[in-house]
Amino acid sequence: MEKIINGKEISKKIKEEIKKEVGGFPSKPSLVVIQVGNDEASNIYINTKKKACIEVGIKVYHLKYNENVAEEFLIEKIKKLNNDQKIDGILLQLPLPQNLNATKIIKHIDPSKDVDGLTSANIGKLMNNSNGLIPCTPLGIMELLKAYDVKIEGKHVVIVGRSTLIGKPLISLFLNNNATITICHSKTKNLSEYTKQADILVVAVGKKHLINRNMIKEGVIIIDVGINRVANKLYGDVDFSNVLDKVSLITPVPGGVGPMTVTMLLKNVVNCYKKRHHSE
Image 1 (spheres, one colour):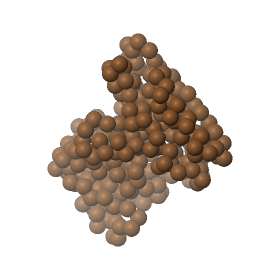
Image 2 (image 1 turned 135 degrees about the horizontal axis):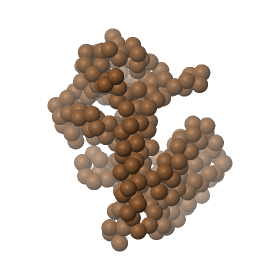
Image 3 (image 1 turned 135 degrees about the vertical axis):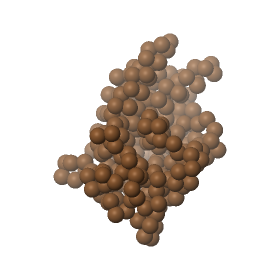
């Protein structure tokens, strides 16, 4: 069915392009993933990232520490990696255990190696529409829309969820493409009043089937970023089968935004490599 945005297919295509490009480099780009603790979801994500890196020819190093690791130790480790000429990208796997301050630690990552686009320097560049590293999921969403020839200019985009990883960067990305933006969150009253106005609706809150057909207008494009695991089955934030006949395009869960997030990480690592080798 033409309505379903195939994230797997698009990500496969982009991966092939990346693999080809990396094949022509004088050396392999490299990524370090830092993990603290043994969060089950993080383990799954990291394995997916490692597999994808190997697939396209990116070297990947996985540093795993137990949750009692000191903040200072992690900061020192990051400083060493910043200065290591063999390392192109640094990723701190989130969430961190409660006793660690992610913002404080991320602050020490060199912005030119910040493949998650979470340092203040990269956030600032995104807001100013200048050339920085963009968080992987928002970047993946823009690529999906581009792949399906969705015109963003002049559209009313409603984003549900204001996280630093997804909601906030999307505001800048859509604004940079001349959309009109409404942002909703847990304190928004009468959510459906806003979601009904959306030409493009992005939902990223992590609440199973939050959005149903009564909350959308005919012909809307829906990007569902939610991943909710219930009894070993994955669900999105949107009630997919309930809204399908009313939308013009929609991402499924799984197989929509998810594969793109990992592929954009590869893209960011390659960009870090190219910038560093270009300036040498």
